[in-house]
Image (cartoon, rainbow, N blue to C red):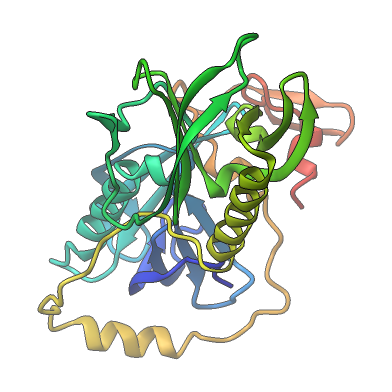
Length: 320
């Protein structure tokens, strides 16, 4: 199920998950936020890779059970301190659609971070005017807003747009903060040593930060508070992530129809499919050029290949 604001940019059949499900054909959905692969044999066999965790993407040769040696898409990711590698092979010969779509959409995602990430002292102002993003609209410009991050406060200007809140100091426009609504957790009016203030709490992923702004008089503060709440609710209902990309229709290879027919015959749910270790299958162990030496595992009572550094048996069992 797609999240709010997420759209499917491209959808391709006959894509193999060569790293974790070699020999299994499936469907690849490329959205503005992630890649979703679903096996044709069972919808329960699937994976999703968010672009935010991607370290790099490149194209190299891989050994596919369904196609042999072929060019494949390598996606290296990092999550919770561990690195994972995903390999996808297009089973349609002479088709570069997988490579071009994923790389282009990831590039669009990577270059639109201002829509989604909190920025301090960023290049967001020019001549005391906000540098508006392509899908951004300014709804209000509030003068005389104090940033309460320092003991004495800093006088500046607050911009309210459809994707973020931006404040900059009047005397130094490079002293600024850009707060996307996607990073906001709380918005409230609280008392401070400077009087009533608009207090914005951000997500753990972005800091977290607690940012205070004083707007005089109090009546004006109430109006600004209501406008921020309204814009935040509107954004939450239909988020703007800033990923702009459209797929041009490409001429499809002649064997695409045959491949689709083959896949259609496998769209069944295998109830007795083997549970396998989904986590270990994608570990990116760049140091492993050959199998590690076996060792006796007292818990299993078996001789097994030694685990990579930082990986425990409990971690592997937890994903089953």
